[in-house]
Length: 101
Image (cartoon, rainbow, N blue to C red; front, side, top):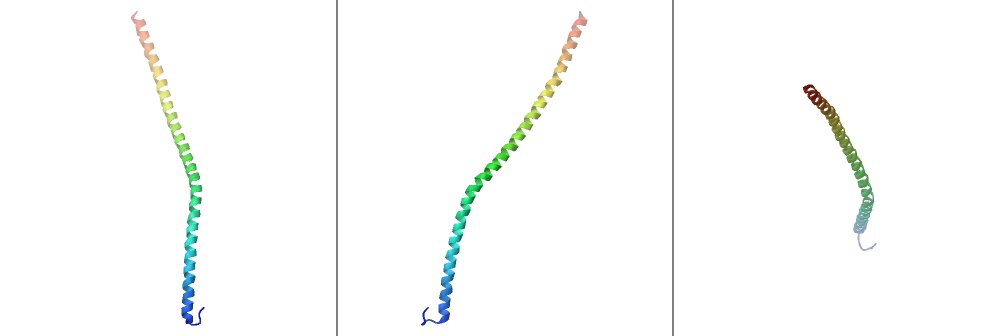
């Protein structure tokens, strides 16, 4: 420190230089943290996306299988309902033919 300058001036210069140094350090620290966070996000995000897509795929598969099962049950029910009706219609037709003879 200079002996020629008053103490207050020397103190303000010291404080100013300290503040600038601290500011620079803070800025570099923030940059480093952001960079590190980006790296972590790159590693973590795909894993989370994979898990989410797997869950969605499972849900969709479940839904489609349920729908398919419902459809097949409905079709089977319709078929079974139609078969006896057709058979009875045929039988009555045969009976009518026999009665005519």
